[in-house]
Length: 522
Image (cartoon, rainbow, N blue to C red):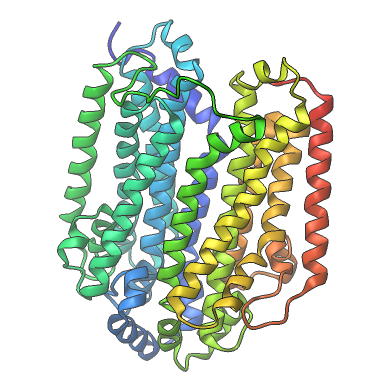
């Protein structure tokens, strides 16, 4: 039996398990870029308008740190500037999630040990995970080429390879992280931390150098993607850096995988205290979710501070462009551009907070399917009390991270602090509604509990891309966020907020009632 025996079978299994995730990641990332020409042409329809935008962006260090430098004022060049960096980050997240799901998570749950008892080579699981990540990024790249080919095939291919290549760079980072730790959650945290550091390096480098040539930018794989310069005199040789990083990290991951047993890791697991200090199911759930809550809170605080400092710069960038002003007003709901930008960021943090809330709810589902909940429930602990222990970090924790984002935005903006903090907390009814959907799915249809991620992702897509595409109001209203007041700037709409809160309570109650009646899923 060779080291790659069974790779084909495991790859087919991985793609079958991801038959919804692969198309969804590709459609969200590739569709985001492919929608760019239509939306930007409506905003900047003339060569003069595009040239003015490029000049404004070059002079604006705050927004340059967010989107990167502009290398061309053509329509394709503006699409690469506006969407390229975020598409590369989304592709990186897809690569990380895919590889961890099919490597460390399989080992943590014990499924890999069962599979390895058959005719499966030592390198087959890692190879199949990387091939699944390659499938995600290939589909994304093909959609980008199809969407941008009309602006120039060479630029479309360059951007597609930059985005897909960045996804594979971080897929191999995840492959390395999966060898280092026994926990899938910690492996995601390590790979996500590397991605966050790469984005921060690129942002710091581009904010100080409009040419994209900063040393900090070149230290970041995300910076490599922008320095391919799609539609701006393509630098094809930069793709060799991406390929080299993928190759080196793949070789290292294979080398580490060959030196450990299934389920083992290179970072030793820290033993717990000799005597227990947890006082109940709620304390145990909080201990399990403490790391995620702290990480999200710090990320929201720092992200809020960065975006808050950009509010005035956004107004300068838009200037007198009425169509761009309309986009910001549809996204933020306020005629003052600085307030519109803050309202947009508040909404974005609100939508991202739903991802935390859904993940916290589904952590309880993971405890159930892994078999760790059954010993707890075999004693005097009731199901509802056990479930409530996990739901408290989801609902109260989402309020905490939104408070952190509000404080960050207020500190970065430097004025209207209480209004910005209040605007952030006003997103809670929508966040709790999506958390309630996740509770209902977990309780009533546990096999489809992961669809809670789909609901949160759909709302994120509708809220972030929908206004720029000028989607019909009926489509935008599918998101609970569309019914909230756009704060700061508008008056608080208490009716919709209370209605969404009641809906969240009803969904959560129905989910808990269903959980109480059904058998545990293992």
